[in-house]
Amino acid sequence: MRSAALLFTFVVVALAAAPPDPEVSVTGGVIRGRLASDGGAAFKGVPFAQPPVGDLRWREPQPVKPWDGVREASEFQPACTQLSEGWNKAMVSTSREDCLYLNVAMPEWPPKTPRAVMFWIHGGSNLSGAGEAPAFDERALIRRGIVWVTVNYRLGMFGFLAHPELTRESPHHASGNYGLMDQIAALHWVHDNIAKFGGDPANVTIAGESAGAWDVSVLMTSPLAKGLFHGAIQESGAVAGFNGALPAAVAEERGRNLAASLKAPETGAIAFLRSLPPEKILEEAFHRDRTGLFVSVDGWVLPESPAKVYAEGRGAAVPLITGTNAQEIPEADPAFDLPAELRKAAGDRADRALALYARPDPLYGSPAAQWLTDVVFRCPSAVQALWQAKAGHPAYQYEFEQPAPGAMASVHAGELVFLFGTWDKDHPPSPADLKLSDQMQTYWVNFTRTGTPNGEGTPAWLAFTAKSRDYVAFTDSGAVAKTNLRRAACDLFLMAQTAHK
Image 1 (cartoon, rainbow, N blue to C red):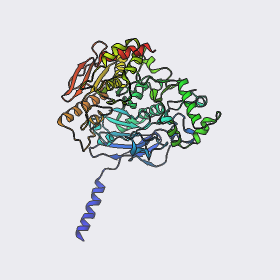
Image 2 (cartoon, rainbow, N blue to C red):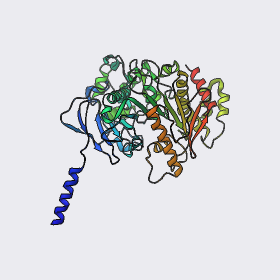
Image 3 (cartoon, one colour):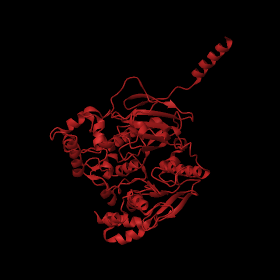
Image 4 (tube, rainbow, N blue to C red):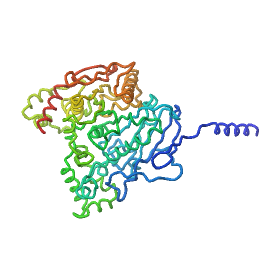
């Protein structure tokens, strides 16, 4: 009896001594997060816009409606509506249209000094994925002293449908790019609220991988995002790839075709589409061409072609990290005809192109793997760095050469386990992997804080210039300074891009 009483007393005292969960007043009301074991805190599932459902489907994000009392912010909210692409199976069954939520984590609670902010945009071809990243709870970057924000944004045809009826009903006479609007709305939320979490609204870096990197590249040309961020990181994605953003007329024509395939009436098509269940729309649209990853020059979010903005030196005047993995696309379809593709892309330079892709390479793989990675990822990233350097803005290029533990090559998204420390228990990291992870995390956090990746304890990373094209290679020996990453191939890519304009 006495033991039970002592135990009860111990529990009561422990509970009384435990610090309360953190509460913060943000746009819309008060939220309650959770303390982290490392002394920081996290707030999950914070609304930054109204649910884009019903009549708000395919409209710009609307301000959140205020709530009464304290809203719990301890659990991730579901991902935006999406279909399975294999890797995203776990989030598909719970995905929904009511999805405009973000997550915030910080290294200390209560906050003491303003911290730099990394605003992470997830990948997934603008078709899949979520701000619910395993890295959020691993806290590898957060423990290094930054505030980290992840965000959901509308995907697929819910995020990027353009249609003449939507253009007519828009107060801005524009349609499409709703997913980009969501990202911009979340950046406004960060600007207005992040100081209460210990973040510095005057020091925000937007960062992303794959489609997230593509969106970062595009946001750097949007007047609606101007002033909302102060640095940018692009991992395996740049707007010079995938044939750039679609012209508005092309995007609207695709929207008309989708509506027709769903048997929408010629007049009132959007009202009809708003009445359909989301899965029906996604299933119809799922296998359509992903050119431009669906973003379009709508005249409002993107008033001009992003490539034109960059080429004229008018992209965001912020420092940039951009880079790719050695074999982003390690295998080609057996039916892929590389010589025919090279002749089509290179025109009168076809002989030169064929010579560049004549043999396998131990780092870069087969000729087809080299070409696909060059044209879709590596060379667009180099072009992005050239644009930045030409405009006089700092640019830092990298290539990730080290395969993830258990992998044969450094493939698309393979660098993320090093950045976030989310190691597979079946494939533990080697000492070399841990060293490389530490270097990458240090560079990324330094850049987020100061606009340069350099700092004490890491090899010098020289800024990219048009002359030497300096870059850092992440290798099994650590970070190594190099120059002229596949320069001959990327010069050919650049000439082909210029010729097609």
